[in-house]
Each structure stands twice: as C-alpha cells, then as structure tokens.
Length: 326
Image (cartoon, rainbow, N blue to C red; front, side, top):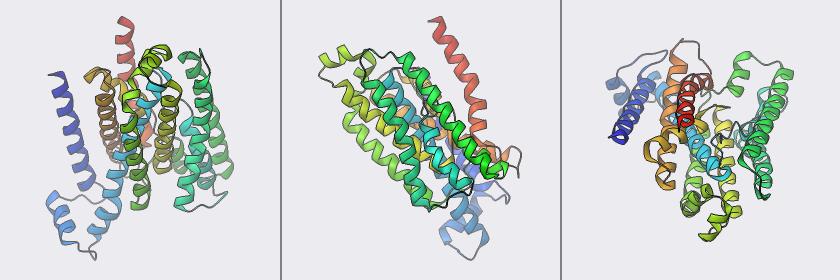
C-alpha cells in the first residue's frame, strides 16, 4: 500500500509539473491552446515557438537531468557503501563545472559540443580519483566520504573563483553554482538523453553485480563478483551522468543524495527496483522543483538547486532521524 501511494504521488507530481510547464509562464495558456498549436505546427504563431523551442525542451531537460542525478547518486552509494553518496558532495559536479565556469565567465568560448565534452572530462577527473581510492584495500566508506566532500569543496571553490574573476552577472553565477534550466534547448537535451540512455544500457549489463557491493568485498567475491570492476563501472557511469547534468543545468544539489534514500524506504534494497525507482524519483523531483523555481517569484527565477535543497534538506533530516532510531 505504501508503494502504491508513493507511485501515485509521483505520477500526480509529474502530471502537475508538465501541465504547469506547458501552460504557465510569461504567457499563460490553456492546454487546449497548447495542443492545438503543437498539432497544427503553426510555426508562424509565437505560441508555437514558446512551447516547442522553450517550454518542451525545458520540461524534458529538467526531467532527464533529475533522472541522471538520481541514478548517479544510487550508483555512488552502491560503490562506496556510503549513505552520503552524491555526485556533487563527492566533487564530480564541481569537477564538471570547472571548464563551464570559464565559459560562463567569458574567458574562453566553446561550442555546445565542446562544452559538453569538457564537462565530462572535468567530472571524470574527479571520478578517477574516487576510483583510485576505492581500489585501495580496507579503505572505509567514512574516509571516502570525507575525501569526496573535500574534493567537492575544492572544485566548487575553484569554479566560483573563475566566475568571480570574470565579473559576470549574479544570475549567471547562480545558474552555474545552484542550477538553472533557463538555457535549455533541443541540442542540450539531445546530449543529456544520449548519455542517460547509454548509462542505463551499461547499468543493465552490470546490475547483478551492484547489490553484492553493499555486502563488502569478501562476500562479493564469494558470490563471483569482482568488487573493483563493479566499482569502476559504477563510478564511471555516475561521473558521466553527473557531468552531463552539470553541462545541462549547472550544479543541482541534494537530488543524488535524497532520491536513493526515498526509493530505499519505498521498495527496499533490490538493486534493479532501486535503480529504476531512484531514477524516476530524481526526474520528477527536479521537474517539479524547476516549475517552482521559475514560477514562485515570476518573472524572477530562483536557482533550481535552491528549491531542491529547500525540499530535500528537511526530508533528509527526517530520514536521518529514523535511521538513528534504528
């Protein structure tokens, strides 16, 4: 029953967010007008341009970025056995934002594709450091968590310094450090979906080896699983997903941390169900948060990361309190 209510709430939030995203904005429209314009494909109509080139890419970008962050967080928690596993807490997001900071600051000029590649390179550099730590024997999760937090703080500080040097508008800086979907486009969406689908396909092939990682290396080996290989796959996929999300929207906090905990409270530790649920929770969470961010003080937009943090932090306190009781 708990599971059914949770999925019903997820579907409800998704439908409300899509309706909100399609019909509300600087120009409010009814759904009938929206569907009429899309079906007739009247490219001379201003509403068609607003819906097709601005609203739909933004809705899809926010959903797939949320899916990517949710899946990335779950994979990091599997591989590090740390309940604090999150791509941004562990520094991957900060690494991916480093090269983007130079573009935002106007120091260098990149095409969308080159920015996409540089974000992935920055994120994978941090991921490789985490992999190197995980290859060491008897390296406990708490040490990995502490080092990951330090890496995250350093990388975000460097990105913030670059943006400050460039003397950009505050909204641009906030868009990078706290997340924004105001620049969403079909091109950005295509790169995001490509990496997400690639990561899902790879995860399907290795999904049977993810759950044993939670049992420790010794038990995983007795089950015929190579812990080092499985962790390498987990961290690499997590790095790709988190880096792409930073490329598409900047740093959106707490999604990768919260989504696996919510999913685990609903369906347990089954790796297949957990990854699916975490992905969907992350997608709907960011989709809904983005609608709140752009509408709450319209026409001024809040950073979407501020909204995700405002929702997620109290929930994490509640989850942490329940875990303490256990």
